[in-house]
Image 1 (cartoon, one colour):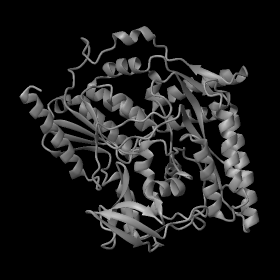
Image 2 (image 1 turned 30 degrees about the vertical axis):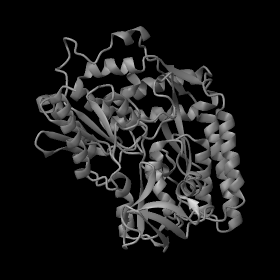
Image 3 (image 1 turned 120 degrees about the vertical axis):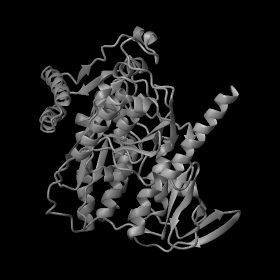
Image 4 (image 1 turned 90 degrees about the horizontal axis):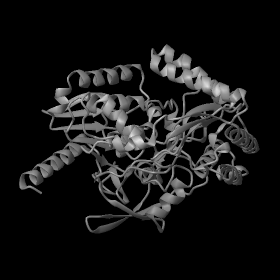
Amino acid sequence: MKNFAHRFSFTAVVTLFSLAGLAVPAATVSAQSNLPTTPAAWSETFKKDLQLAYQETLENHPGTHDPHNPDFRKNLDTARSNALALADKVKDAAGYQAAFNRFNVSLHDGHAGAQAKLPPSLTPPARWPGFITVWRGDALYVYASETAQPAVGARLVSCDGKPAKELIMENVFSFKGRSDEAGHWWYLARQALIDYGNPFVQVPTQCVFSHQGKTLTHTLNWQAANDNFETWRLRSYNGETLPTGLTEPRKNLLWVAMPSFQPNQAERDTLNKMTKEITEHRERALHADAIVIDLRDNEGGASEWSRKFASALWGKERVNRLMQAYSPNTDVWWRASRDNTRYVQELIKQFKSENREDSAAWAQRHAKGMQAALDKGEYFYVESSGFKPEAKATATTGSLPADPVSLTTPVYVIVPGQCASACLDALDIFTRFDNTKLIGAPSSADSSYMEVRGKTVPSGLALVTIPNKVYVNRTRAAGQIYLPAITVNDVAWSINNFLAVVENDLNTSASKKSSGK
């Protein structure tokens, strides 16, 4: 499927949108010189900005005219109604932010919605109870604590009489993420015991924990966030991540860190160098005991990076054959609105400025197709895969004469709960090969709508994100996640713990092989 090589979801403001499960493009928010100053003004500003976000989505989102999703307009209307139900209660910036989060949750699409872009002076300061929890498997556990109680490793049972999962649904998933995706529990459930200033939820006061066969009732001491909060919050779900690059933590075990597919220039250089090194010295991978591809911290970006690296490992034509066989009937329908077409046209300049000529040619081809459709008054420009379905039967993981030597080295891919968009594309590619094993957490999921851009509303207080294309007949369905072969439930996702998982699996496989099982 040729379009897999290109997905550009630039997310300079991803730290805000990722809380709602969104990936968004870079955008410049206008200076906010006329901020609302009264509760009534905040409420009216929210209503106006919500309507603008709704209208932008209605006019440009592929779902509006997608015959495969006839309920899209109804769902969009419901999302607006659910947000409007809070509008009269919006009294300040915190309420404005939370009400837009309700709109996003109701829309239930990680590549669409709107997010508040508040000045730092108006962003509600985070509070915490002096400890951080993390979701592992089926519950929240204490990851780190400034005091002896609750102890590290203690499991949250309930708060104020509410079972832990009920608290998480009410205080987190009513405003952030998608509770039907297992990966979002690993990523977001921990926020049940963090106060981000949402005026529409009641933070708990007393919680019950279970640890080593005993239960403890703990009164929460809510306090301002400090350095421990910031450090532990990030490490709790990703662990101590490595910068982009190739390392060898022990002889003959290669560790490939890919924490982002939306790299800056230095990271792009490193990714290219790493791919070139594997291509030119492939025997290093062929003779390794194992290869670990570490996707912790990865929230998507451009899928070209994982495809290039997979081509270096397994061979470009072999990867192309398997990806075509994986999803042979996929077409891409680009919503040819005026603003969407202009966005793709602007990508041409951006890619040329980054010396990405192949990407610039890709953007130019699609901009031309979208403009032609727009001129004819058509809703979509259709990019056909051009692949014959009957060719699926001929695709193989085996070698053809022109292929490089097959890679049989065990490949372990560390998957974080927030893995979505181009990160899922990477899993699509890596799992085509039977020597690949996923470890870590369940992934997040995508809708079928991709290639997002952002537009700031006139108030400057919110950024609308709009997908520009829809995948039709894609094998990986909307909402489909990847489950790990080995779930890593260690409270600390440290490199040493993952190394232990890999070494144990290698030893187990070796034992089975020697015993003939």
